[in-house]
Image (cartoon, rainbow, N blue to C red; front, side):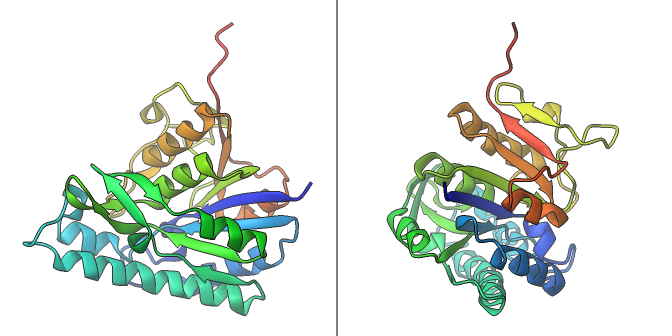
Length: 256
């Protein structure tokens, strides 16, 4: 059976840490090459913002909302993440994959920082045609607070709940969720707080760090869709269904 995969690559792996608005072209090219070589089914790609967007969002306080006093931050943040998205799409097309950028600002609506709508029908049709929709973390208009930042991880959770994906994976700059001793935690159930497992990010991140990623994936796991967190270098393993040495987020723990 042909698979339908949802893959998210972290902003920290496609941008240079600590350098505002600087991409990592080597990582982007490697990701594009591995995705273009995948032929086992259809794919939807989501990427984080990394050093594109997070600094602007933080400077203008968009995580807390927007009004006329900080509205300039909406355009600056969106422009930054769109630049990175264009780089991702161009790399995919250059590697031989058909891809098109999808910007959440224009097709989404949020309430108090959470997505309540994102038009999925175009994504479905694009994948049916063999085209990769490429979404990204973005600033989104919010009916309660004017605007908010929606992370790539929240987008993964939203799409995973509404489209029939067979597998979901997050590629990061670490080999999985790490314990306090630095070892990969092989499995995290949906009913245990992610803070037990995951620390915060060392870099500027207005969307929750590793604990935020796990929390979003736990929502999917509670609905019956497990997911995987693994190192960037294991994308090909994930795409082809091979062991990737990372963390699996699963349903509730069986307490016997």
